[in-house]
Length: 81
Image (cartoon, rainbow, N blue to C red; front, side, top):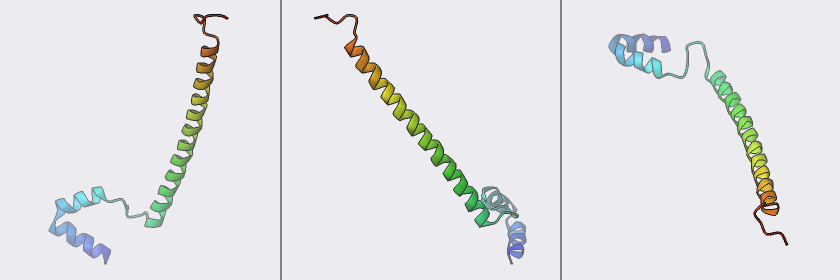
């Protein structure tokens, strides 16, 4: 049935059908579940990358706080009492 509809659409409106094929996410060989599994893997990878960026950001903030505190305590222009 799909093949019949595809061939009919290709004969009736070849330009529109060609554009729809370019926009289509599904390939002829791929199934929806394979595509969804691929997306799930991509999401997991992006989540792992985001977690790594968050850890690095926390580390940078800790280093910045430490540096700022140290500069305040050991400022060379500060009056020594």
